[in-house]
Length: 399
Image (cartoon, rainbow, N blue to C red; front, side, top):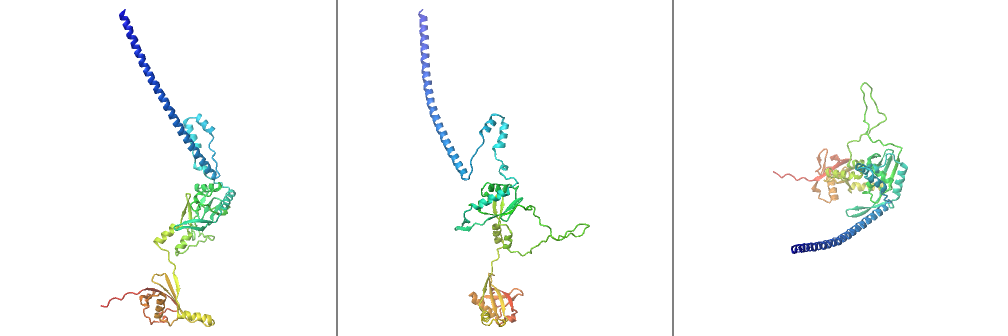
């Protein structure tokens, strides 16, 4: 009996110890739950603040974008949410991808003008854009500051099959760059491709040639007479070709080139780089400065014209003498009996140099006029002659 009681007491004590241990674990777990709940509340509050900050930032950005669109007379419409919800709820993943490709992504063809152009509307838009320009002057940046320049109108020729800006090239309506330009004009905006040259816009000078078709493949007809085997000559009486000679100055060549060319929506200067290349490889000729030298024959001729214009003009000689560098040409009106020394003295006086520092010579036939006593009549320099100057050559030393 005593043994059973002891066993029961040991069992009660063990169960009591186990209950106390479980109570301690329960209290520890309760404290852990309270700590986790407090941390979760703090994290949720911090997450909520982050979301509110992000929402305010996005709302501010949306407001700025709406004001930006409003400055250009535009308004954001968006896409219907019902269509998106229906597409997301019904349909497989492949259908969703196809719908996104078809409706959500921008395609270049969506913003292009069809080849059929409303010419009346286009002309009205060009007129409105020209009237929006308040001033016909524009401030152009210069290396030393800025300069006020007159704003020249933009020449635009409107054909049935395309347009031509400045001096070309021709731009057909089916060209994507041309369609983007026309879309800007029809929407009431200045073409973006011209904003680099005209940042504040500019007037248009439109030539309405809608009744004419511009030949896109402009091949000039072959000159001369055509021949066919077994037939007579084929003549072209209505076509005349004019072939310019080989003599062409650099300025004439540059004037034949267009000032600007538009390629892929960018305005490219044509004459400027070519002019720089020509000046670097073959400099443009410098204009010759003509200087009239006062001579006794010229003074006597002026006196005769003023006092006795009815008297016959005497026989005179006109000499044109180029300087050593070719930048100056001296014009001397001399008498046939004047000498080479007289010419040399007049040139030295006009140039403010010593008469012995230069030589007078003729290129063809090569002749050097070093005899100061020789008259112009005897030298064959009457009634006119073209001479040259060069520095006097040093005489070889005596043996």
